[in-house]
Amino acid sequence: MKPQAAWALGVIAFASIILAVAAAGGSAPPYPSGSSASNAPPTQNVTAPPVALRQVDGGVSYYAKFRAGLPAEESFFPIGVWLESVLDKGNVTMDAEAGINTYVELTANSNVQLIRDSGMFALPAFPHDAAAGYTLSDEVDMWAGPGDAPWTGKYPGEGSICSPDGTPCGYTIQRDRRASAPKGTMVYANYGKGVTFWESDTEAAKFVRGLQDVVSADNYWFTDPNICGKGEGGAIADYTRDLNPQECRLAANYGWTIDRLRELQDPTAMIPVWAFVENGHPSGDVEGTKTITGPELRAAVWSSLIHGARGIIYFNHNFGGPCVTQHVIRDCGKDIVPTLRTVNKQITKLAPVLNAPFLDGATTATGPVDLSTKMYDHTAYIFAGATKPAGGQATFTLKCGGSSAVVIDENRTIPILDGHFTDTFQDGNAVHLYRIEGGGNCGF
Image (cartoon, rainbow, N blue to C red):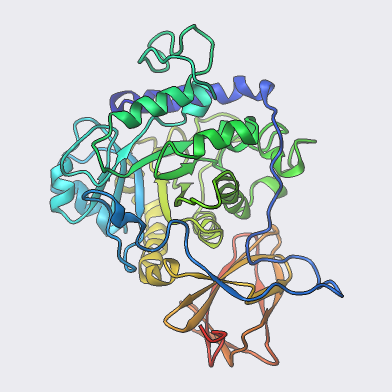
């Protein structure tokens, strides 16, 4: 997307959702439960999978492949904002204080060199020597469609996009945009409801595979007025019905989006998936819209991380609500920034763990939770988030043992007895992060 057209295109793309719902279709993806999660009681006579280490998608040193790219260090985890303007040092300082380290897409008048000189990173949609990457057209799956027709070079609102008019040319647009990226630069692209809901697996996979080096999709489960519909979030129910609010307005669905993108990839050539989370009120003031709350934001972020997201991007614009702005962090600080800052600080502190391998098969749970187990410095970590609106109690079974589970940033420790411990998840936004003491590493 052209940076100067992005703000208006956000409104255009949102409006196109309503029109496209009627044409929604394609094969429905399964609703995965997470690579290490189990919400069902143990089944008898079933052999448990072996415990195994699994590297994060792309590997921990993935970003080292690219020219002047993001740090390929275990202590770095991308935390970005979408389509910001950076005009002076004050802009960078305010964003950095909120825990931001990456700008994904930028307005055309932004100072990319200032971003680099400030120790932060930029992925603009235009070439720049100080950039750490290059962003392709946003949500092209929605406004150009899955196809190889010629591209006219125009964007929504500028005239016919594909030639002949009405034929899909989304693949062409991304290929042409990638060809304009500086050689050796990391290329990123974000997609929308075409890839996640409306297109067949084959059509969607052609966007996800081979066109970019890092990918994301923006499904705003807490605030989108249309996402609960049969042709959108109804994918969770095999497109048979609308979702009720309890099923739809759920943090665990952000993990579903990550799983959808991971499943569309070539399993032999996995690339990092970044998560998109709204930090405000991304839809206009129409029926069914709201502003995300702090607990919802934290839970959405951690659901994404539990399911393997390798970066977080905040949609930093408000089209409705009490603080309409393109700069939520800078202009609406009293509302969401305290929570956002705390979440980002926690992510940064745990970056070495998030970048470490998964320890698949090491932990199972009975109860309403998704979970993942990570292995860092011979220590196991379990990240768990609720999957039901009312939360509930979950019992964790640790194949690798351990003496206690230290609940990170909660000032409490739970004893592990005979390889089990139990904890309570207060509601659908509950997240608990555990460090396993006294073993638990299965020899890794």
